Length: 394
Image 1 (tube, helix red, strand yellow):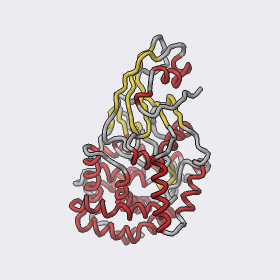
Image 2 (cartoon, helix red, strand yellow):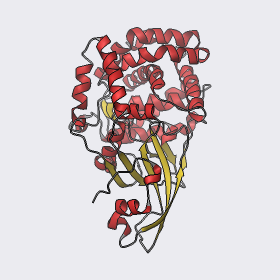
Image 3 (cartoon, one colour):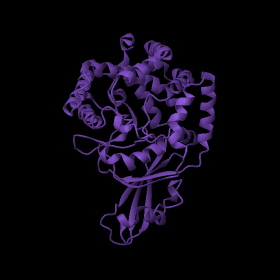
Image 4 (cartoon, one colour):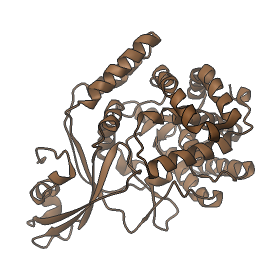
C-alpha cells in the first residue's frame, strides 16, 4: 500500500515512513529502526535533490537494502518550476515503473516510487503542440505564465533507488579521453537498438518526441541568448558568436530536417558522465531518466561527446567514436542507417547542442561545481564546432 503523505523534503524520510514504503516485500516482519541521511553532491542534480539513506533494521530481513538513494524535486523554486514544466519528475517515475527492466541499459533497482497523480499530464503533448502553433508573442506570454504556475505546483514526487556504490560515478568536470569513451558509445548503441525506429514508444504519452515544441524551444533560446553571450563571450569567440547568429536564423529548420531524416529510438536526454556509474563492466550503469524521450539516437551521442571530450581531442578521434557507435548499431541488428547519414546527423546534433546549451540559463547551476561544469562544457563544445560547415548540414 502506498505510504502517505509523500515526503517533500529529506527530513520527512523517517523510519516509520520508510518502513511503510519498503513494505513486507523487502522488509518481511522487520522495521526500519533508524535512518541516517547523507545529502549528495552540489552541482550534480540540478532539478532534483539526492540523498543516501543508511538504514538500520530491528530484525533480520535478507532482501532488504541497508542503503538506498532517495530522489525528490529540488528545493530551489526556479529549478523546481523548470522540472515541473518539463514533466521531468513524473517522466522519471514512469520510466522506472514501465520501461527500466527492458531498456537495454543497466539501471538502478527501483525500491519505491510515488507521486501525486494528475489527469492533466497525459494531455501535455497536445498542449505543447497547440502552444507551438501560436504567434510568438503569445508563446512568450504563455511560457511566462506556465513557469509561474509551475513554481507553485503542489504535486509531490519521490523515488527510492538502489545505491550503486561502490561503482564509481563519472565526473563531467574531469571529462574523459576519447579511448575511454569508446566502451560507453558502444553500450549506448546496443541499448538504442532495442527501440530502434521508435514505434514501440508511440503509445507511451510520457516518452515525448524530441521534435515536440520546436518553436517553444527556439523562443527559450532567444530569451536566454543575450545572457549566455555576456557570460561566455570569451569562450565562444567570433566563431561561436557567428554560430549563434546562424542558429537564431536556421535552428528551427535544421531541427525539422534532422527529425524528418534521422531514425528514432529511446534517448536518455541527459547522457553525460555525471549520470553514469562505472563498475568494471563494458557498459555503464545509467541514472537520471528525467529527460527520456523518443528521438534521434545520435542526440545522446553528440551530447555525451561534446560535454566529455577534452578540447584537444583530434577530429579523427571524434569520428572514430562515431564509427564505433555505428558499428555497434549494425552489430545489434540496425540495417537502415548508413554511416555517412549517421555522421551527418551527429554533426547536426552537435551544432544543435549549442542551441540547447544556451537555454541552460533557465536552471540555477549554483556557484561552484555547476558553474565550472558549464564553463568547461562551452569550451569543449566549441572545440568540436570549430570549422564546422553549417551549410552542408541543411
